[in-house]
Every structure is written in structure tokens, then in C-alpha cells.
Image (cartoon, one colour):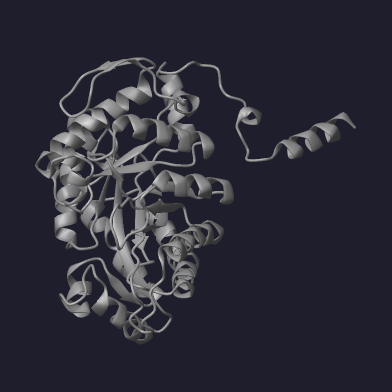
Length: 391
């Protein structure tokens, strides 16, 4: 099972100091957080996509492309790629480029976003949100799987003889998640294609999450991709930890009370009771999240929101250390002990998808030698290595 963090990239005043970072500081903090997550041994870093203040991550592929060059193991993803307001041609090109640059160490999550004004800003009608998500993704898949595409639809100009470049790495498109909180049509879309489904339940009770996940599982089986319990599921979560539970409550309360996303609404006590937000000790997080399998079955990815509400960078890095050092090892062990043998441990890696495609005859059979894959080394590194071999 994969564990990681996601960021919405909000620029929020720290209520304890009155200090507000500027956009540059916030972007650089996100880069530091992603690198720290990689060094700590987490599996995934995901960034949202927003085009309005107070959020800064307007260009996910730029950020993730940079991180591909400075991280080693972590999977780079999006917490939202706006399938509704982005041109699917640009999505095909940008994410195939990211796939090549990262050597397959990436995936992405399609979503409609939660900011209504973004639609007219990009010339779209929010009333067509579901239809846009369906048509745009159908075109995106064709651009990745077909070398030459002729296409016409409702929402963009037709394509004639169009080839998206670069082509996907090893002839296999990136793995795609579909994220939705309340739209069964998106769960249906994920199931139809056999893609992953992620329910970001940070504002919702687990009963609602279980309903959406179970609907996706049923439809996944209906479309013949495997049994319902083999469907690829992810959840969003939210925690704040200290060794001493009361200290966690005392420290996080001013951030909760003033956060733009939920401040001045339900009390922190109500919110932690009704949603997955868990404030307390690492053991309390383990107990809470370790019980989610009982409601949604075995799932493959758990992401946590940690760098929000004006929390200082130092605090966020401390939270990552607690998560990676004390929580994840226990949850990972428990997940593996409960996982039925026929259920995937995690979402499919690029190598696994390439092997499956070749076995099905969907790409050319010749394997790409490991040495042929880009390693991120410089030309000088390659020359030095060649000299060493010659000697």
C-alpha cells in the first residue's frame, strides 16, 4: 500500500504570528516538502492545480518536472488535473513529457476542481462540467494510445491526422486516477476504463466515502476489469500529530479555527468526529486510519494533507517525519497482513503496466534495456563512466 502527502498550495496567514508568505516562498516550501517526503521514505507527493488566489500551483507539470530531477524514489502525482478546463491535447503532451522526464515515476488524478469561476476564465461552462470531463478524457486516452488521431466532438475544434508528442514512455500511457467527492458519474468513468478512483474525504464522513467507493467497485467488476475488491482505490486524509495528544490539539486549534477552508464553521471537535481529520498522537492516527479498511475494503493509496492553513514549514517537516517514522510503517504492515492474495497491494507501477501491455500484445515485444532509460546523469558523467570501462 502506498502512503504519501498532497498539497493544495494555499497561501494562508499564520494565525499565531500574523505572517503571510508570498507566492515565491510558498512554491519553494512545496518543493522542500516534496524533497523531504522523498528522503523520509514516503511513496507519493501530489500537487493540486489551481488558477486563483490564495493557491499557487497553477502549473503542476512544471513543479513535478523539477521534482523528477531532484528526488529519487517518490512517485510524483497530481491531486487534481483539471480535465474540464484544460485542453486534452496539452494534457496529453505535458504529462507524456513528465512521464519521460521522470522515467515513469509519475501518475495523475483527473478532477473537475472546486472553484466555479475557473470555468469561464478558460472559456468553459460549469453546467457542462460532467460532459467536459467525459469527452476530454476520452480524447486524452486516444491521444496516448493511438499514433494518429482523427477526432471531432462538442467542446474543441476537430483533429485531423494529429500525433501527440512525445509518445508515452515505452508505449504505455501514465496511470490515471479519477477524483470525485460526490459525483457517481466520475466513479462510473473510472470504472469503465479500469482506472483508479480516489475519494478525497477530508470534508466528508466515512459513510459517504464508503458509499462512493463501493459504487465504483461494483461498476469496476461490471465492466470486466476484475473482482470488485481488486479495483484500485485511494483515499484522502488529514492529520496533525504530536507525541502528546493534548499538545497536538492545543497547537493545531488556532490553525483550524482560522483556516479559509473550514475556519469559522464546525468546531474542531465536531470536525474530527465527522470527518477523517485526526488530531492527536501517532497511535491515534494509526488506530483511526487502520480502521478504514473495515468500511471501504483494502485500498491501494492513502494521501494526507499536511501543509495547509498557514502551518510553518518547520512544523510541516516535523509532521512528515512523524508520519513516515511512526505511522506509515505500522499501517503498511497492517495493510499487508489484511490484504487478500488476489488484491493488488498498490496501484500498478509503470514497469508492471508495460509488462501487462506486452503480454497482451498492445506494445512492441522488445524490452527497453535498463541502460537505455534516462538516469538523470549529465553528459560528463557518461563520458567518465565510458573512460572507466575503457581503462
